[in-house]
Length: 59
Image 1 (cartoon, helix red, strand yellow):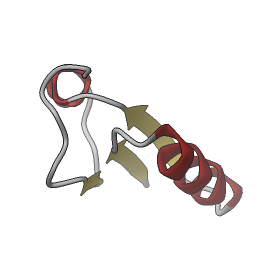
Image 2 (cartoon, one colour):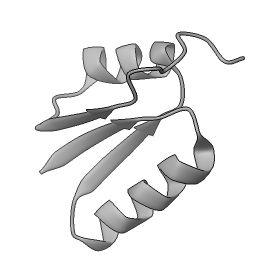
Image 3 (cartoon, rainbow, N blue to C red):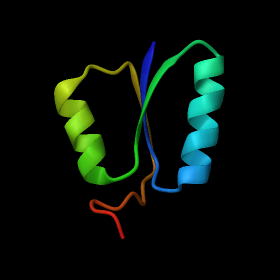
Image 4 (cartoon, one colour):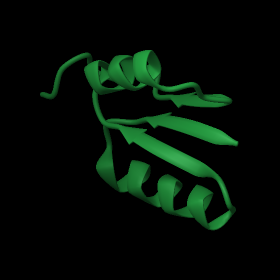
């Protein structure tokens, strides 16, 4: 299963990505809305874990 994790808090994102990868999942991490949009346009994902407050651009 391929997962996109879109989360701007790098500590949370890195911990989740590590845990999911240890569980055998292929995980891509996006830290901004633009990164998430790019990933979604260039890859196919089975699941997207989305921070609803994700900024479009870095702060």
